Image (cartoon, rainbow, N blue to C red; front, side, top):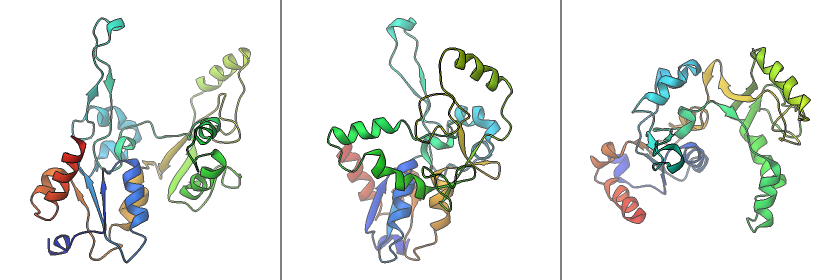
Length: 243
């Protein structure tokens, strides 16, 4: 608690996918301290680690915020489930682990609309730097040695290829790499997975550096933060800012 009472150089609000990356990168400067606030908890669970238990993870109130849509008029007033991850790692705790960057043309459209620095050519080096790709590491679109381990499905269901044949008959193109030169088409997806376990930015970037700063600290769960006088004002300030 005495370390926390000293305060922090940076406070990152939200330990989702982006928050974990930001906190980890900021902590690379040994002169600075970082506090990462996450309301959902640590996100540690066997249901997170084991890919086959994804349904149990999504059903867990401790791992899923269990948001719903407003009543849908065209669905007889039914509410649609909107799963969102609750804990360090964000929605990567409960998603299908699919590693997909999106269509390069979308990034270029954002750049053209005024988002400086967001063209695909400009963000590609960061994608490459972030991954350790087991299949396409030598490709200009991928990298090796990064913190997030990525690989293609090793034992795909044979029905996938029957599906591909049907799509080819409709004129769709097969892509060896859906994160390559052109993402429009069909192909086997890549996964964020390490040694059979789910990979998140919390496990890949945050957990390895938690001891990087001897006088720094992180806190998960707003309830835990309230017990520390130095962090409580930060939490309250964030809440007031959101109102």
